[in-house]
Image (tube, rainbow, N blue to C red; front, side, top):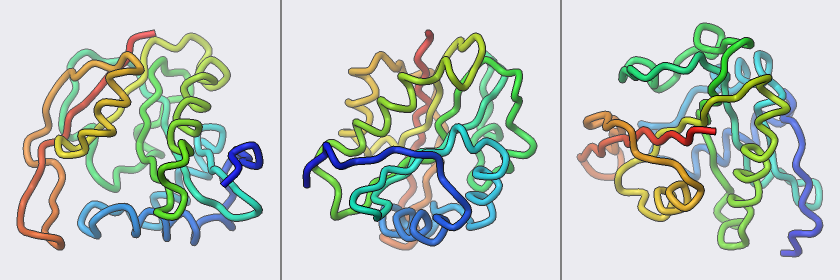
Length: 182
């Protein structure tokens, strides 16, 4: 795969089936979000929903929301399938990365890193005065956590048993909320 042929663009509604395919192939079905959630994200904050495209095929996506910065985070802020229509604040100062996945055939080429860096490097085009970046990662996704730590994210709180892997095997994993102050 020649990453020079990679195109990053805003998601469109007609991309939804490929986005869902990547979502369902990347995560246990208990933690996959619903189709309408992704449609709402595209319609509500299209500038913050990017796809990576290679030779006309979508191979990854990353979506985000603008929130008002808050030191006192609650688990209810991060609920699976939460409505961007309720949480997104166009005048906010924090970019919450709500979902991010790369198709299995495109992993190990650095596509995730490119897509992630593209979003965070352009945060000032999404938010007038950005204060921070925020995301949640499962405690057992150590490679992802290490990438975020290297980018300057710090672990700010734990969401106990946040990820339910009931389909793969009956266990739950804590969610780690990570934040990078800008």
